[in-house]
Length: 346
Image (cartoon, rainbow, N blue to C red; front, side, top):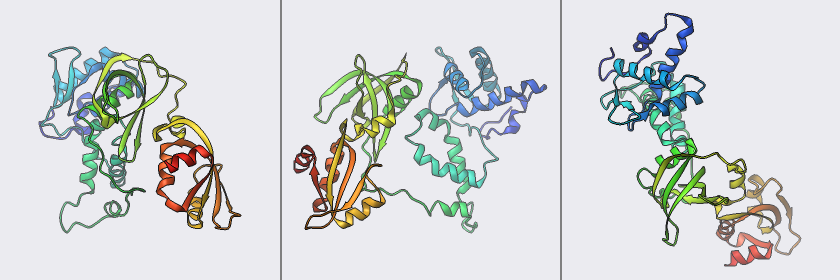
């Protein structure tokens, strides 16, 4: 029996150790279940069963249920049997699953990955990895003031992601919105939302979540409204509420998140591509030769009296393009097309 407030180690799993090699997979399933049981919310046996199937463990639901019953007896896990399906989670006093074999290099990888993965994984999965991230941070924290500084600990102070624009604080997302949006997106479930647009108009709708994009400090959901075939983007900070339903949908084959982004749909565009001709001064030409605007960009010295360079590229027609050209002041001018020049002049 594992005592309360003690981390669960591989030694604590001896009770599940098989007597026959054919049953070794039982230990693997026990470990997988222990890793997937969260702290902050309850998870049901069907949810865990689906996760195991996705991980390649072909076991029926009843087997998972029996395994969970056994884990509750031997580990600090509580079962809420007040309604069906039963819910499982680690008790508040439990330390959870410990990874004594986590090396300093692996800890460094987890510490660097945590911030990047925060909005790239479903919230439920991030919570289930909380113990891993906490242990990684502990492994890289000096145990004493005079403890030697290792190269892995030192590395955390040597790297940083910096914003290419004026840094801004992220907008506030209503409680529970990201959790429900990511859960619905992960499980291909319909999402019921209450949304306010820029003008303050509020809409109640059922949407099919298709993709999540992190644009600077903001998060956008690509989705299709019930009864419509076109894809739209909703800013998560404009969602007053979001509820993940139990209604599943078949993900449409004609949607591709990368293509949706490439067409400028997250940049306030309508998926139209423009052949753009810009005049840029010599300094901008140098910068854009290092970081081109597109794969087909052409940059040649201008024949005009003011010098500079002519830049020709195929770009997504979007407000982001207009705002970027405006932000460059007199260092960039639109030669063609006329509709882009008119939009920049505003």
